[in-house]
Length: 283
Image 1 (cartoon, rainbow, N blue to C red):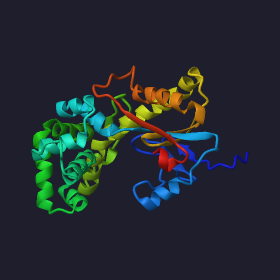
Image 2 (spheres, rainbow, N blue to C red):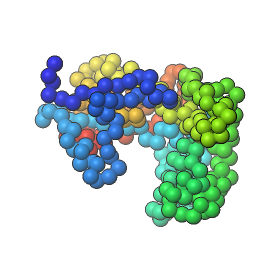
Image 3 (cartoon, helix red, strand yellow):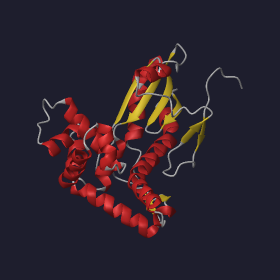
Image 4 (cartoon, helix red, strand yellow):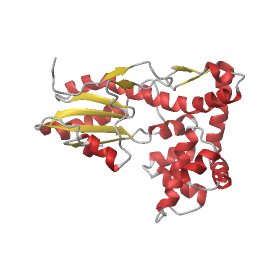
């Protein structure tokens, strides 16, 4: 039917880690990191009597890392609702969190996210525009401050080499047959991929569980909100303006408790949610 709307198609099993993929058009790839790119998002609107609600998991892969690698500093920081990147910077550079220069926090943020993607000293140096030796020292110091993360990385690679797969916290297997390749580059690529796969795969499992439960939860609450899009760690809904304030708590509750009862997370999941007239303002 002609709905006068943009419709995408989702593939459930097209990615290695279990993330959904979108096509025709790819609505998971609408720019967000630049001012010019965000202008495109302002074109995504809803009816005048409705609002868009964007609900986004906050730092979910780092939270999963803190859970599976049992990192006490990260667990405590997330439990306290602290700024995880500032905490990391304080641990690494002996700088007080209060009054911390933004550049120091930015470097810690790049390291936090880089480490879980298996970043090299060369890659970190390029990202931060610093000498390679300095980047190497950052990574070394990071592992000294958070030895549990280094252990997680080495144990994950060893498990993947032995079994040819890794598992999410729900037991779903993510296969990497080329991790035993005789090609060193291919082998190294698969090792790096396996490190993040447990984290990204677990995040993908969690949001799928939330999506499955969402319709029933909204109906039970007597709400008319409809789920429109999934963009990796974000769900976008359409709801009548009068129900916005009631919809957001229901959405957050479902998403933040999606791992239960199968897994009791040692780190709380947190969802940021807001409503607006277009996708850019809601995100």
